[in-house]
Length: 455
Ligand SMILES: *Cc1c(COP(=O)(O)O)cnc(C)c1O
Image (cartoon, rainbow, N blue to C red):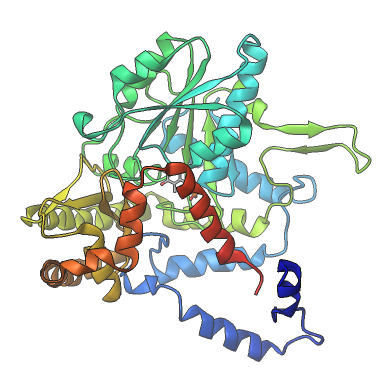
């Protein structure tokens, strides 16, 4: 049968002839939601950042008040432009910028990173037109969004090691050695996603400055945690605009900033760089069209929700949130690292860490599967294989429960070595060790297509 015929034969969802009654819609939403991970129980070490019911209520109310608005036009919605510039201003203050610090609210970390790469590409096109193939130096631990950005904007990603030899941080010597006449930008993370360590930002930014290239700090994960931990007296390596040579930062409010999903901040030290982010098309029949970021239409509800969320937290709220999360994390790290079978990797400074197995009888991904069967979700990392924990505030209440389940699960996994050859453990294990990475790309893209194919 040809693919076309098969498609016609398959029964797929079409628009209902008549509008579905709202009761039915909500019933179906509720039912389907039950298949999703139960993040509110605290059993999910990722994806959803939640603080308190009161905080949620404030965000939701602000969100609903601004529900149908569109931030595309600051002229139609000056209130949204005000919220956005105030969010940027609050962020600039937290990251020790000054009155010159500028930037935008974007739809998330990925958009912030896409925009940063595009901005520097265009800035250097004007400033150094002799560069035909601009290069960006990335530690191998840097978020995958940088690879995506380089791919989208035709910039060459040059990876440097961030391995065990340098305690899973960017290798400073390799960074310096990678700089050549085509380099436009260096990147460091605070903190990096895989192990929660902070790259040697001060050294890297100094090298960048000396070589007259720009330097971006990716604080998507740590931006709204590290400043509060520092304020609480924890020792945090300098990572923000205080560091000479740092020219821009990305920081997600929709992670530890506790704002609605679809909000992030992107800041620049200098307006002359920032302006390269914008796009204006003045010849359009639809009128003069200008926009600061990737999106055209932008939901005002998210910006209003983010503004309200940050205001409601305030410094005291964020400090409490950070303290609670950090204490829970420290206990988890201490107990996990003390287990003879497990080892916490690197130097996690905040509330993100990962651990691997140091016991031949314990396959770490199989342990992940056993935990998942018991309702606990930890993502699987590779190079080396490890399990990942992003600790969120409301998990403070479930630390002891988790440690208990972890003990049982370690025993169970060791007694069932066959689990390593089954389920997710087998699949992720294969992916982490496969030699032919090209065929893996194709396989993963096929998987993605399957997820979103019409039903
Ligand atoms: C989450 C994250 C990103 C990407 O952000 P999204 O909001 O998921 O698009 C980038 N860098 C780091 C370090 C992150 O943790």
